[in-house]
Image 1: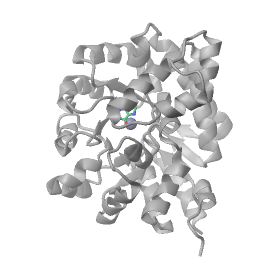
Image 2: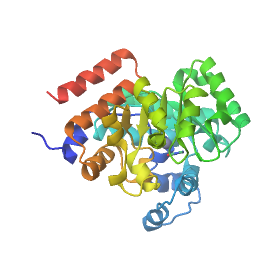
Image 3: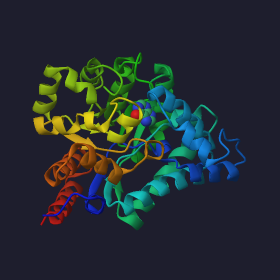
Image 4: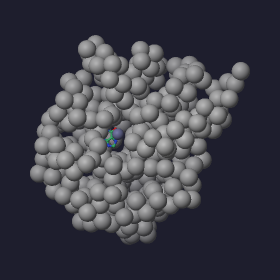
Length: 336
Ligand code: HPA
Ligand code: ZN
């Protein structure tokens, strides 16, 4: 019997559905871009970076994450950021990705929307052609900003609808319920976009319900607080509504004190369509392989569970049916 070790997990074919491109900015590239663009950085050494990357909660992280994103200025910067993530995916046998980007983080400091999206989508296209990694891009609205800002961002996205599959909702969850953006999400769906939302990461299970009922989401990002509400758990199981769970993120942001307390495998056993993702890998200590590895080490994840988690991701993805079948075939081959 094959043991579930790092090597096996690394070559396991995988799919990533919850990844913030800005959160894949490694300190090395951050320093390089700061130099390239003559941008002042808050850190001078790697030791200072490591010290800063100790978070007590989501907001602690977001403060550092938005600061880091200030080094991204030109189209090439966004290309390089995206390409570095895809190269990592290639090393870890990730077949398909559905990254998020936060346009408001950039447009609010004077970077043009088209600079951001053109750099990202050119890299995604190269990723498909040169690395064989398929992708769909998701635009996230920052929920700490207001409805009008989100509408304005959606309008800026209109000329680029061929480059995005859907919209999402991220940033500070508590105090910013999904229903704050009901009308924006209505408009996005009218434009033919799919919807997802971060909910039940730090916020209550109620925010998962309102993401479902008001925003009509196809997936919930995080959603680990669903276990607080038995009716919601039953709904998620009955409808097979996917949760994009991020184990290392959850322990780094103290959603769970320790990985041994994480509820992902309990939800999997109950029949919830949970998936494994890295969220902001440059800040949380690992990409896809490391997230799977953490589940093996702390929770004794089996080979069968790893396979089911990937199967869930393929089924929960926004890839077309042909690509989904291709990925299922690749996964089945790995197990034969
Ligand atoms: N939660 C909310 N907003 C975010 C996250 C997250 O985990 N990562 C990047 N923006
Ligand atoms: Zn996230």
